[in-house]
Length: 69
Ligand SMILES: [Zn+2]
Image (cartoon, rainbow, N blue to C red; front, side, top):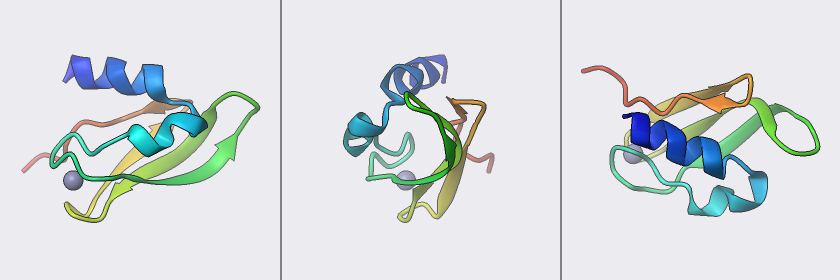
């Protein structure tokens, strides 16, 4: 999972959001921005409609750990 975290931290720029995929199904993620600055998304969430899973972004750090089953 550390690899996923690093991957998303590097890519957490709004203009690169279209290449982000769900860590579970590799499907497209929908970004919801609650708060942002000039460079980064500060808080919000990434949503996968396929898995019905929401990955929160807190203090610019996306939490992309798949939900526990
Ligand atoms: Zn998914």
